Amino acid sequence: MNDDQLLRYSRHILLTQIGIEGQERLLGSRVLVIGVGGLGSPAAIYLAAAGVGHLTLVDGDRVDLTNLQRQILHTPATLGEPKVESARQTLRHYNAGVEVSVVEHRAEGEALAALIARTDVVLDCTDNFPTRHAINRACVRHGKPLVSGAAIRFDGQVCVFDMRDSASPCYACLFPENASLEEERCAVMGVFSPVTAVIGAIQAAEALKLLAHAGESLNGRLLILDALGMHWREVRIKKDPACAVCKSTETLGLA
Image (cartoon, rainbow, N blue to C red):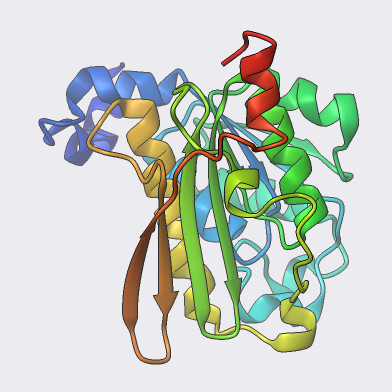
């Protein structure tokens, strides 16, 4: 680190759990943020401010007026622009030393797998089950830690699935791919804007801890927020031995 970086990140360096070594890990890390909306906005801002070396942002949408209530990466000046470009402009103001790459379309199949293969931590900030399951499958395949968040109405949830640990559950252990689950989206159900900020910030915190090797992650623990009553609940998640996704990697000897 140079003198400017030592000063800029001094409050991290003062933390014994991070220190210079941990901050250097952050500066050398690569993080993939899929979705730069309500969750991805605060997550990306904190990751950039903290000095993550390379951020890759994936989102195929454009900035809409309805986004501005909660998606703090975007402003009225960027209405109509691709969200990833709007996000890149904003993050440059927060920390020009962070390299930001963007993917201006929905990443699927082998393209998604290739993005995940060359990253250190993946943040799922999306809003639909098919995409979440696709991200999970790629993280299981390549042994990458996944930080998953969701927010709807006054409720939020966040969990870590660290696929470097063979005992870790995956997202499909919690929400099986073949389960009949009702899809709820904020465009229909609404969302309380601070909930997205809280969950997105926790996603960033978990990613930074994983990268800096600090503390205990939320691996195998689901945090559930009821913001209307301001209550937190924690649910332990066990690996499903019959999981169709992470069991197959064990069969192949990849876990």
